[in-house]
Each structure stands twice: as C-alpha cells, then as structure tokens.
Length: 287
Ligand code: NAI
Image 1 (cartoon, protein in one colour):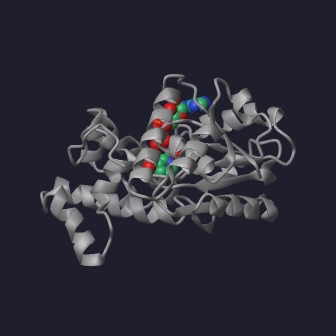
Image 2: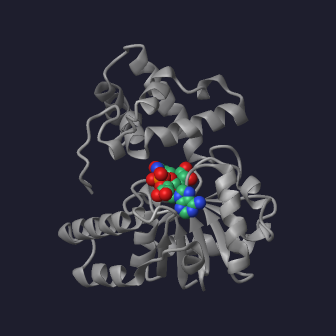
C-alpha cells in the first residue's frame, strides 16, 4: 500500500491523515465541509510542531509528512489512485453506506475500504457495498497521533488478506493493532462506554466530583486517564450516539444514556471541542 485517502477531517480524520503521512503514505484528506480542511491542516501542523519540540519526530520528517499530506476538494479527487480509503465521517450508518456507495465506482478492485466507526456494524456498512469483502473496520483512538491502539474489525464476508493488509498498514502507521470480530462496540467501545456512562451516573447522583471519580480509576486501578476526561476528549455527542446504539443493539440497561449526558449534549457542552464538558478546556490544541 502506498496511497491513503481519508474522508472526514474532524477530530479523527486529521489525526489519521497525520499518522499516514508520517508513515510515508501519499495521503489525501477531504471533508464535505471545506472549512474543516484548513483547520485540519493547522491541527496537523500544530501536532507535528509539538512532536518536534518534544523530540518525538525530527523537523525534516515533520516537513516531509506535511509535503505528503494533500487536501482534496472532492471525494473523487481524494480517492483517486488510493490503495486504502479510510472514512472518518459522522457516526451514522446511512451516511457511511452512502459514502462507500459513492466511492466504489471511483476506485480499483483491490482498493481497501476501511471505516473508523467506533461502534456501528462493519457487516452492516459492508452489506451495502458492491464488493463487501474489501470493507473492514479500522478503529483508531483519540488523539490518533498519540494512542497506539487500532482495532481492525473483521466480519464474516471480509477477505482475510484484506484484514492482513489493514493490520500491516496500521503497524506502518506506528500502531499496535488488534483484530476483533464485528460485534457491537467491538472490544474497546463496549468497555469504555460502560465505564463512562457509569461515571456520569455517579456525577448525576453526586457520589463525587468528576475529578475525584476520574482519580478513583487513575490512582486506584492505574488507568492513565479517568472515564470522564476520556469522554470530554472523545466528544460527548459522539459518546451519546454510541451509547444509544449499544443500548439498542445489546439491549442492556447499563448502556441507557444518563440524563446528564443528554442535557450536556443539548446544551452543546460537548467536551474539549467546545471548550467545556465535565471539565473546562482551553480551545487551543494542547497536544
Ligand atoms: P467529527 O465531527 O470531529 O468529524 C467528522 C467530519 O466528517 C466533519 O468534519 C464533517 O464535516 C465530515 N463529514 C460528515 N459527513 C461527511 C461526508 N458525507 N463526506 C465527507 N465528510 C463528511 O467526528 P469524529 O469525532 O472525527 O468522528 C468521526 C468518526 O470516527 C465517527 O464514526 C466516530 O464514531 C469515529 N471515532 C471517533 C472517535 C473520537 O474520539 N471522536 C474515536 C474513534 C472513532
């Protein structure tokens, strides 16, 4: 694989574009909202400058990555010649299906279609594709340039060779991939959401402050970051959508979204991206 296209330049898309470009892939990034693209590029530059400052990457390597990262105005331009297309658009099954249907006629037979969905059924996304065996999950974590895990999600119709190619691409991007069978929430979201929602219910019940609830897991169990801080970083709107989906598909009461989460999302208190969630955040990229 040499060329990667990323569709969706938000929280995840810009980070995936960054790690792909740093890994040496010719990388094209596009978004339906053209204003998202310069913002994404700026975030990548800021991340890389931070990496140079911390000695994680040389200035030359950072410059070369920026050179390899191209902004594309349309999906068609982004996926042209791509060996791997990774979608990171809104967490909505019909939007993702429509996007893959739009992309399929534009790509070669052996181009791999990967989705960064954090919870939707990969088989469900793949079943709308003309060639379902080349559709797999490639689930990155936020912030992408820092988190090592990628869940490569396979399904009954997936070609094992495609799964291997995606695993290999993730490794080249500096990640430590695991292979997970397609099931609601995969391994990570199912566990992470359960913990996050319970922590929110505890805030709601006044059990302790968000800081202290997070500290309970950070200091008591060695989690590097508590579930409320994680939720703020992920985005509370994203967490709500996933919780609703898991509640529906797994039919388990502990996935029912707590009232506090609904209220915060309604108030556009979405976490780091809006400057406030369970914690106050500076809007400037802190990575
Ligand atoms: P985001 O809202 O930050 O970015 C999504 C971007 O996609 C937006 O810029 C939007 O304009 C664009 N977009 C929407 N529909 C589009 C279309 N049809 N074509 C092109 N661009 C389109 O969302 P975020 O957080 O980056 O999430 C993206 C995906 O990644 C979702 O599936 C989410 O579940 C998943 N994910 C999110 C994580 C997180 O921590 N935020 C972690 C892992 C996965």
